[in-house]
Structure formats: C-alpha cells, structure tokens
Image 1: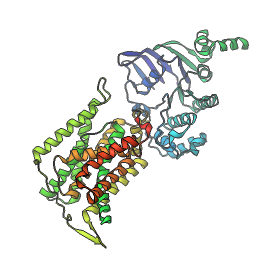
Image 2: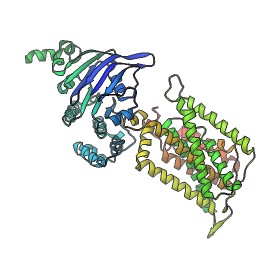
Image 3: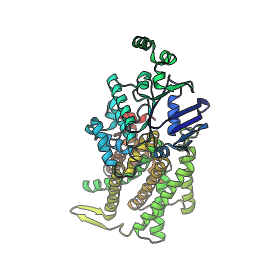
Image 4: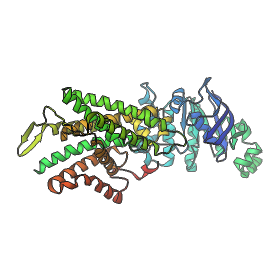
Length: 243
Length: 293
C-alpha cells in the first residue's frame, strides 16, 4: 500500500536519506531497525509529510503523495505517532483524543472515543486531567489512542517503547499487535529490535541513510548480521541453545 | 467616589484586556510579538470616527465596518509580511517581528497622511448620557464598553475551549508540528488567528475612541506598548493572563490618577513589567515550560 522509491531527504545541506526503497504491504507490521542517526525517524517524517524529499517518490494506495502536507496525508489515511509522543500537554486527555478525530466529520466520533477509553481505562479515569500530567507510559497510550481515532489505514509508530519500563513496553507491543489484528497496517521504528522483529512480518535495517538489509522478520531475527549488530551476542547464544 | 473609580478602572481595564488578547493570540500561535497590532487597533478607531462622524452611520454599523477593515488588514499582514518569512531557510526568527514593525510604521504614517496629525473627536449619540445610581454616576458609554468587552472575552474563551476550530488553534499554539500531524491545516489556523486578533484590535479601537472621545495616528504605539506590558504581566500567550492583566492595569492606572499622581499614569505598565520580571518572569498565569521555543 505504501511505496518509497529512491527517496532522498536533506536537512539543509546534509543528506539524511540516500535513496530509500521501501514497501509496506497492507495488513502487515513492517519494522524499520537501525542505530541512532541511521535515518529511521527521517524516513517516518518524510512519509508523514513533515519533511519533503528532495528526490524520489512516495506512493500511497497507488497514488503519488510525494510532498503533500501532514494534514493532507492524514486525510488519505496515514497517521504518525512521532518520537517523544508529542502530546498536547496543556490540553486535557479528552481534548487530545478529540483532536485525534479532528478531520472526521462522521457521527461515530463520540462512540469511538468511548471505545478507545474502554480499551485504555486510564485515559477514561484521567480524561479531564491535563495530558502533560500523565506518566510516560500513559502518554504513549494516549498518543497511540489519539492516532487511532483518526481511523488510519497506515499507522506510523516512531519508537513507541522509548524510555518506558519493561512491563509497559510489553503492553505497548501487545497493543501494536492488536492494532494490526484489527486491520490497520503498521510501520514500526524501534530500537528494541528483538521485540519488534517478534511481532513484525517484514523488516528493514537502515544504516547512515541507506537500507542495508531487508527480509522476512522470521529470517532477520536469526540473521547473524542483525543478531550481532542489533540483538547482542547474548541472543546468539540463546538462539544456539534453542537449536 | 471609590465605586465610580472602580467602574472607570474596570472599563479601561476591559479595553486593555481586549487589546492584550490580540497580542496573546498571535504570540501563542506564531511565537512573535505583533508590533503592528497597535496600529491595526488605531485604524479600527479611525474607521469608527469616519463612519460615525463623517458618514453618520449608527454605532453598530461602525463596529461592523471596523471589524471588516481590520480583518482584511490582518489577512494582508499574514499573507504579505509573515507567511513569506515562515519556514524559510536562513531567515532569522526575528525577521517576522521586524516585518510587523515595518507594517506598524507604514500604517501610522499612512493614517497621518490621510487623517492629519491631530486628535479627532469620536462622537456617539449617547456620549453624555449618564444614569445615577444612588451617589454613583455611570455613563452609558461605560456600560456599553464593559458589556462588549465581557461578551468578547467570554465568547473567545468558549470558542477556544469548546469549538473544533478553537481547539485546533490551541493545538497549533502548543505545537505546530503536532497539530499538523493531527490533521490541522496550520496555515489556515494561523491566518484565522491573525484575523481574529486584528478584528479584536479593531473593536478595541472603537471602544477606546468612545471612552476617551479622541483618536489620533499615534495612539497605536502607546496602547501597543501597554498591551505588550499586559501579556508579559499575565504570561505570554496566555488568554486568562491577558484578561486579568488588562483589568489589573486598567484599575491601577485609574486609581493612581484618582488618588495619586496622574503624571505617572503611563509609567504604571512599565513598573509592572519590571516587578513581574523580577518576581515571576513567566507572568502571573504563565508556565515555565512555555519557554521551550
């Protein structure tokens, strides 16, 4: 459903993406791995329209959407949960959720907000509270819930587990799986490569603005290059033990 | 006597509050002080003088004309002087500020050229009508000013907290990027904000004309500086702060004139700035986090 071909994005003079080719298939979880500064977030921002590529094209559902604004892309069905969550901290939890459904004109918004709050009871409990007073994990839930309220076809999640306690991280990955099972395609950027590959269908690995490896998640998780660079040696021995 | 001064102070204060609201809305969304706001306010006042005095229109029509003219000015300000500078590489973040100073000079001199340098009287049919409640004399004009101010402030508060566009404005003010990924057309919201702020300036212009019965091309600068003082006092970009700060300044100016030395009237605003910057630099309602721009 999403196709990036030869995408090059610059920050001023500095080239952050050096010709990215990437494909996201409908109904799957695709993960984008790589070290800090590899260009993962830049790729996400380019897809969401926050950055405009200098060369190359972005195609979504067979339509060329290169260079559209974020609000236009959201209307086409691409929602981004950015790194650092980007909660509207001076607005209440409920207002944040309402903003998620900002572009929708149907009458199901209220019911959808109710549903989301049922899925995340903490948001229901804190709905009148300023979003800035939530804990990190709660803010991440709010950011994901908010993005879901826009009814996206493709959800871009940029490091949703960053800075969260292990228990919450597990919860977040569970939620991501649920989102996919509910029919929304997910493109996931993660530092936590192992967890990401466990739930993903396909993976790409980036290094300094290029995609260096791609393949089925089940292959990548045992690929020695990835195990060494991103999963740590410990997991190599684990894998050996399992075998 | 005390009650009369209180009424005078609240009247003046509510006008100040409306001027400051215009500043604070634009600051909230764009992060700059709109130095042309005072001059747009002045143009609004002149539209009032011209339509009521020269054309003999009724007051409500004068308000409508002033709102239309200042809204158009606001739109042009955004389209011609602010938007071309936004998001361009190599443009200093101070550039839009300088740009608004340019607009303020242009507008002041333009009205100087058209209307002349002197004060113009602002005549309304009920300027001299007053009612006595016990010992207290209240002018109808004061009641009108107060009522319009309160309606505007309540209206704006409700609009910001309850409507979709109002929420989008607040989201844009908090974080442009976040608002845009939530589907807000931030360009549209910014334009809307500058237009609303300018229209409020226009309304305040007529109100000041009515309150002081005089309008001049230089009035924009003085009120602009006071508006600036108020939003520093109340907290930059904070709507509640603008309202409370405006009332506070209006009351303290009035009481100083009544019971102290009227020569220091215009100094009050600046004494307040010094004190607030020493004691609570983020302003009365400001939060420390807001400085992260």
